Image 1: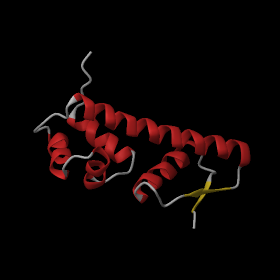
Image 2: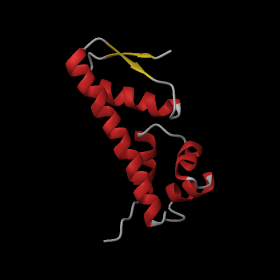
Image 3: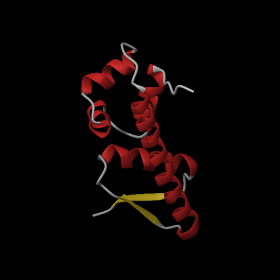
Image 4: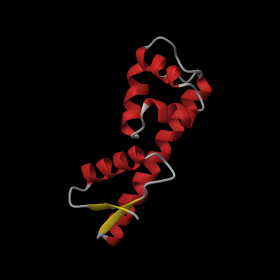
Length: 110
């Protein structure tokens, strides 16, 4: 079956994983304008790019699961890195973790 994604799903996924249009374009190796056009519904990303976008979402979900597992096992302060992904990626991870575990304590790793 053909893998498709709506403009709203592209935008929602991008926001969920904490990337700007430019950052998502860089991750997918496309132009900023391509992502902008996908979100406006002017064009649809080809199937391989949809798969790449969904793989980024899955990577974000796995990172969230790792943070949740750490929180449940260790407690204490969870250090969020500032790289190698853009900082928004980690802010979004922290927000998603706090949504699940309001008692979690976060800080930036040095």
